[in-house]
Length: 457
Image (cartoon, rainbow, N blue to C red; front, side, top):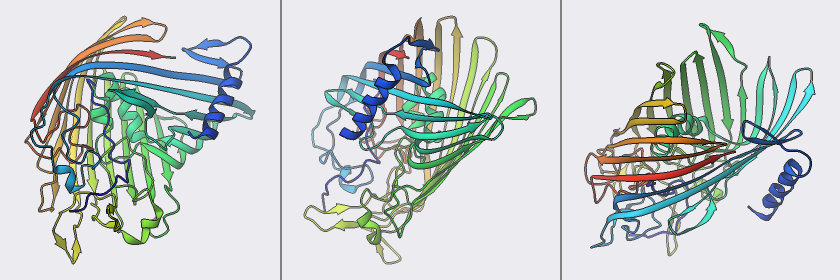
């Protein structure tokens, strides 16, 4: 058996819920100085504004105690879920209730100019940092920015943006849906979607008056890593939002080819591997998802919300790209390790699955509370090996939040996870212990209690 070095960011494990380069740093420093130095600073909706510049940000700290938790179960800790050697656990390793913590910080620096004739030009720069659990602070997804784009808009013609940006499949599922009911990671960061785009172009229509409500349509294309010439990456996302009084419906469809195979809805869309020199050594792959989410205000206090997502993966054959030692492999998906198909060793198999969530939220003055549940379903595949397709996961959360004003709020809650069986986690999960730190290979259930502080500028 080969034990490769880590070559991918697509299956990065998120810290569990209790749960720049010098040139880029220079750009941040200059923009911050220009945007915020000198003169009066106006506060509009908590944003700092100076002339055409605006600065928004959020900072969050969360601490908890989680049961059946252990980060050091794997014999090869850097191996990703899709690699067979990741299945090997350290004999006799104990797990139990442990304290966990995480902090996040993300600023958005924007600039907007009125060009006349109804046209406006804008630009956005944003990055997120993360730390906690004894791990040094770092960029949230190393090597990738959240926003670095320019746009032109007109109230009659819509908006056209180009550059780095976040996909709706992650960002809308994260906020307002998952974040509002304690399922931000479990819902938005699972499934067959992608979350960060690197070379994208996006058109957003003006609102259309449909059935006494507003309908906005949007299409996004990303060409990924253009150094791949044989297996050229291709990303399409189509998004529509309908808003009528207390009802909001969001529909998102992603169809992609030759991105990095993954089940991490927050992950970046790039190429089949991080290394274009692998292009001629590997086969193609594709994946996509279709998702509908809705929220409805029953009255001034009660809101119901829910979502349904269909995932599909083509699978990706496991291929040694560098003989080593140690051997280095491509980013594979749903592999029949040791098997063959049509003369291909270690073939990847296609798979489909369905996930969903439902929630009830109550709000009165500065208080809000919620009850939510989510299911990551079993998958349908012809793979004769068990790679998580027979497992499912159920997450439940109960919590409340209090807003102190001026952007500061505190929240607390409890949650639980239950797996359908011991073994590899469901195919929609990026790792076997993602989101909660409870590893499905050693425990069928776990729970946590958490407390957090959130500041929004």
